[in-house]
Amino acid sequence: SPLVLRPKSTSEVSSILRYCHDNFIGVVPQGGNTGLCGAATPFHDEIILSLEDMKTIHNLDMHSGILTCDAGCILHNLHEYANQYGYLLPLDIGSKGSCQIGGNVSTNAGGQYFFRFGGLHGTVMGLEVVLPDGRVMHLNMEIEEDEDGTIQQSSTHRKDNTGYDLKHLFIGAEGSLGMVTKVAIACPALPVSKNATLLVCDSYKNILKVLQTAKEELGEILSAMELMDYNTLHLVQKYGCGSNDSGSRLLQDMLQSDPSTQQSECSRPLFLLVETQGSNSDHDTSKMDSFLTRLYDCNLISNGFLAQDTKQMMEMWSIRESCNPSVARAGCVYKFDVSIPIEDYMDVAWEVERKLLAFMEPS
Image (cartoon, rainbow, N blue to C red):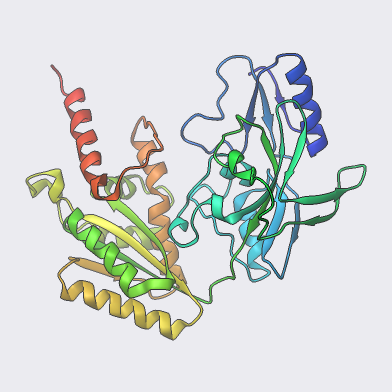
């Protein structure tokens, strides 16, 4: 692209889009540029419209927990802001250090807490969007601004059942219907206690049983479940993207079994990261202990590692968040954001692997 524009306010975004609309100039919206599917990449001579300079956090309603901010705010900064007031941002992904909340909303990002809090269609309470012709829409968001664009007052309601809920059209639209310029997102209370465990399973059938057991035993405190396969963790161990010495030792313990002796990819060990969040440490720890005991008694896991403190929990998440950069470092990676019925997930993954291996073999 020959031109990148970085507006600092909604009025500037509106003026740019109105001009481009009237003059038939293509526009590609960009957030933090962390997406892996190419949605923010221009094809020809389109103008890139970046919101990186729109990064003001306007307010956090201490009663409703609704945080209102500009679309260019870095996700990690929103986490820190919410945490200092006793709230938790309900979206957490590996690229949070550079991705922007507007891009998260526009791509309907899921993240590691999708199981607990649901998707952005449930947590986003209001949006400000600018349509392609420059018109500004406030969707369940009331804003009063002065002449220089500074917000004097804003309000968003958790419940508003009047008329059409149009904000859902823009969540996941990737900027095709308009640009998100402000976001209001509902934040739950910051959890008092956390527990995490890394489990090793001999089959995907057992993984599914572990998932069901987690729902039954952990119930309301279950916050995240992340599946990793042997090949991916082997690449994390090899390239060490983001993992420290302690994390490397944990990886070594997890990867003790060598799949080269196995008959097929279906026999390779699989790894599941399970996290809980709650409000009572003794209660939550007891539930986690009961969960692990049941898994061992039913022979659903071959090994397990329970985090003893926050540092070990961070090491476990570091391993998970190192998966994508480690795989990317190993070679060329194509990403496709697809949804597969959970019972068919590994069958599809193994079939793709077999097809790729057959394609790579010399004829």
